[in-house]
Length: 115
Image (cartoon, rainbow, N blue to C red; front, side, top):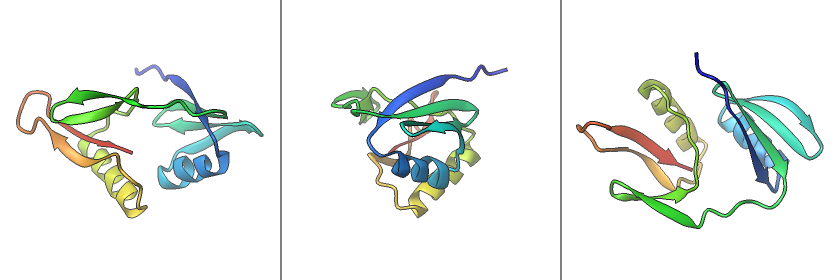
């Protein structure tokens, strides 16, 4: 059994956060207050609080890509990943790195996207 994690992140706009996580990503909203909101994110708890946003000015090399650091993500079965990529593309989400496959045909092949 996978143990759920809790991650708290600062945001500057709770309403835009509700739209993105609730409507675009389809996450179920949980508890909330005027300054924060929780979401069930693939069985884990994301908590968004009003406050200054942490900068992601650093990058790390992964294959041929520079990826934002720090970052977090979900490991999904390929059909679920493809459905999420299609949903984000249809919603015209701006990708930092668009959906693609890395290390194709190699040990560690991975489908990835950053948004």
